[in-house]
Length: 313
Ligand code: MTE
Image (cartoon, rainbow, N blue to C red; front, side):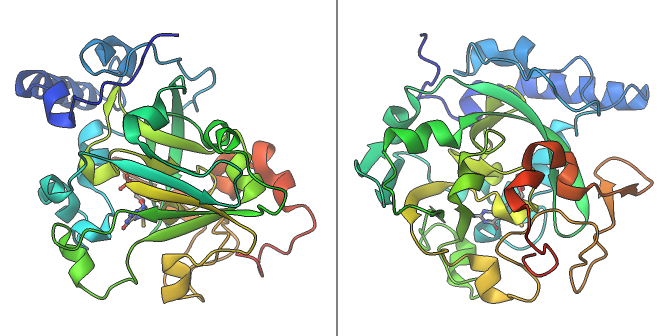
């Protein structure tokens, strides 16, 4: 099995300015031609320089245009780097990603603290083209590069008491300006039920668009749970804890009436401040209908059989 992770590369290293500008021109050209975002720019032609080699291609990507890389990396939510959509890309270099360690603890037989490269080594990378639907009613289609969270959790051997998984982002207020403001109780925390975490759609991502994750998108390791609102997809993870009880999560703690623990994309349950029945795909003019479970109902609706999803929103 080839080694697929090169810890010495950074997002800047792997994307020389000339390549980036060339990609930018191609993207603009594709859009100008009405050819749809990023046509011909699927990641595999560009993997050679990235350290993310031999990525297995998504066998069934949605039949939708990719959001241009420029939009996906400049219109972001990462409150540790500021609350405006362009703040995280402007302040991206403040996030210190080297060295990076991840702790896996709680209800596991083999807890540990691993350097990122050791954490990633056994996991073959795959591309997954997933929609990301934000609670603020915008959405994107992004080719993520990562691996199933389940594979990682199994390595640490969950005990019979494990029912939930809790995730924590880096806490580094000396570098992350948002953590000196009281917008959320830091560090950012998220959580899933164990069966949600083990679902094959749930991935840990290390890259997107054939390159390492830009800092503003959650380098070096983030969660992607495509049937849930974007805030569940926690960025820059340093701790994964298996628990018996449902864990505290940042947005639910801040405003429980607005952000439920489940946060399944549900066009029938409005957010108090936003209509959730429609969404604006970044780059499109007309709003489109939001699909239950963000279009992934066939794979995940059974996880919630018998639950009132208006109550458990
Ligand atoms: N993770 C951390 N640590 N901090 C954040 O502010 N924002 C969340 C989520 N993960 C956030 C986070 C929200 S609200 C969304 S919509 C997604 O990241 C956005 O992911 P993207 O910026 O890569 O599109």
